[in-house]
Length: 455
Image 1 (cartoon, helix red, strand yellow):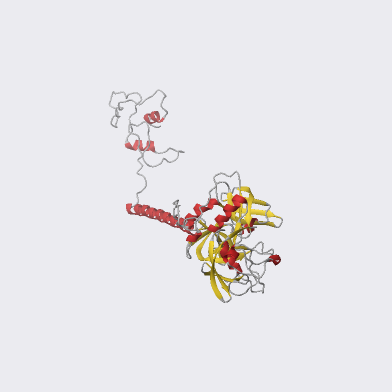
Image 2 (image 1 turned 30 degrees about the vertical axis):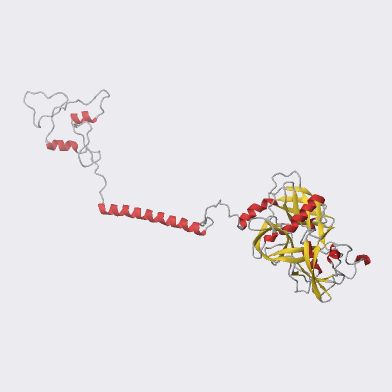
C-alpha cells in the first residue's frame, strides 16, 4: 500500500487549487508516534528507510522505474533539469574554420571579378578607350573650314534630255537664284533639277549658255536662304597655292577634295564632238592635282579663304594601252583643269544680262592645219572671203595673210588653239601686243580686240 501523501500529491490538482505562498510544515522525524498523540489528518508517518525504499520499488507486474530522482511537480523544490549544452570545441578550431570560410569567400569574389573582366575583354561587350566628342569648329583656312563655308552654296544638277541624263555641279552666284555651271552639263537638257547640300531639290530653268567658254547659267525660284559663294581673283593665283574642289563625282554629291595649283595659263581645248568646231571650248586654264572626276564639272575650285578662283571643267585621263585601245580612262590621275574665275565672272554677267556671251576677236582666219611653231593666218577665209576681215581689228593693226603670230604680250604661242585661248582670256576692247613673223623677220603689232557673239 503506497504512502497516502504520495497518492494525494500525484493525483491531479483541483482547478480551484493554488500553491500556498508559505512553505508546507516539514514532516515529523521518522519514528513511532508519541503515545497518546493522534496523527494529523491527511498525514501518514513515513516508514523507516527500508520501508521507504520498498515503497519506491515497482510492485509485481509494474515496469522498472527509471534510475535517478523522481520528478514531483507538487514538491517544494521540483526537480530542475539544467541543459549545459553541447560540449564546446577547442576555440582554435572554430577560429580556423571561420578564417578559412572568409578566405574562400574572398577568393571566390576575386575570381569572379577577374572572370567578368576577361569576358569583357574577349566577348561581345568589349569597350575600347575613346576620346570625347569635340564640338570645336575647324580653322577657317583648313580644308574642313573651307568646306563648311562653301558647301551651302554648292549644288548638284541632274539633267535629262533626248540624249539621256547626266549629273553635274554648280554654285550659287546671287540671292536671286542664279547658278553657274558648265555648258556641257546642260547643253542638251530639257529638264534640270537642282539639289542643295541640305537635300532640298527644285526645278531650274536655263538662262543662257556659251559653248566657246563652256559656261552656262541656270536659275531657281522660290528658294529662300540662298548662300552665294564669294568670288576671288584668278590673277592672284600662284603655282603651289592650296585649293579645294567641291562637286558630285559619279553622283556622289557634296564631295570635297584638296590639292594645289600645279600650273597656271594652261591652254586646253575640250569638246569638238560635233566635228565642225562649233562646240569646242578654249580655256586658259588653272591646272590642279585636286581629284576631279565626271560629275565635278561646273563645281567651284576654292582658295584658302573659301573664295572661288576657278570653275572645274575638264580632266586629263590615262591612256588605255593594254588592249591597244586609244580611248582614255575617265578617272582622275591628278590632272584637272578649271576655267579662271575672272573669265567665268564676265561670261556669267553677260549670260544673266542678255542670255549670250561675247567673244574677243582679232578679225582673222587661222590655218588650223599648220604644224609649225606659232599660229599662221590662212591665205583665205570661209566661203572664199579674205582671211583678214576688212577694217577689222587685225587689219587696222597691220596683220596680213600668211603672217605667223608667235607671241601674245610677250608669251609664246605654239599653235592656233593657243592663240585663240590667249585672246579669249581677255575682254573685248582690251589691247594686246602681237609678235608677228613675216618674211623671216619679227615685228610687234598693237591690236585692240573686237567683239563677236558667242554660240
